[in-house]
Length: 412
Image (cartoon, rainbow, N blue to C red; front, side):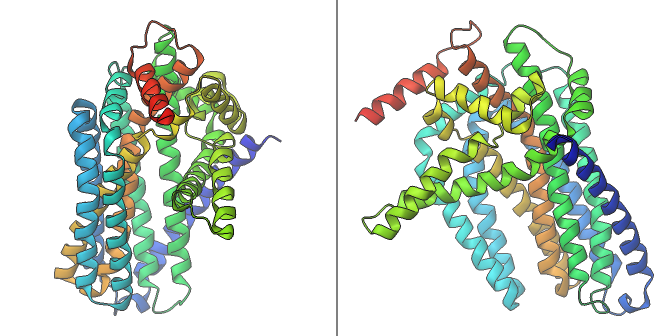
């Protein structure tokens, strides 16, 4: 039995078990007498559900703004991400508990790191705008409908899981391990939302790639193929890619520290090796070949990385800001949703403020990443198609000019 079949079974089984758990914990938690004293559903549910709907609407609007005005959206994301995170940190501090102070401090440090990163990559903004514009100049037909449908599905699924989280919260006084149910539900939220994003990413990257090669394909047919034959690969990628991305980011951060200390040198050497090796076993670029050639996840990752290596595009790929744009957009939307629910709950019932704000942030973040997935897919397809055939008439001078600029800077 292949790995993709195993993960396909695991994903569907996880959905079934999650649904059963959420239904049971919701009914039992809300009907149990133990939860009636301290848990107030009419005060807990409205802020979370409202912020979930708010996240869906804002995410759809933001992906349209990014598509229509990429230059302004890129600058706004690098401004709004740190700003809204800082405001969210202030809200956590205002809540006043020991845990909220810690979360507020972490949020503030995150806002500072985002600001420093934005200053560091500012010289890349011009190229990031150009590559985003040229790769999404002719989006596949029915892209907007597909994105809207996926956001609606994601919103409904989030609302369903929120009902389970509320039920588990109602049982916290009776069952001290009720937080385990909340943790399991949040893990399911992360995996499923990543899965939905990658379904869109695989579908749109396939259609865009074939469109560049002059073989247009119907988006709905590509979406059906993605669901029928690639669920296992998407499920694998939905787990491995976020983990590998986090490890690569840590490795890059360590490599920037440098130093002459022998221990630090060994750590930096290890981290650089990790940065170079991980994409061969899992990267978002692999979805192009998975969609087009129905390859296994690891095989597609290795093949696309070899294409980039052969075309001497690795410095370009490593400096791509599309992922950072999507991440900061998600952080901005998540922070906004967190403040919507947090301020609401502070007025209604302060004891719920911290947990509700965190749930709203995560939901808003995943909703925005889901909406931005098709833009990332277009960029990925453009890069892979260029790496395979740089002399294709469909390409302009955007990538060659950037490669030449990188080579000149490295020579200096």
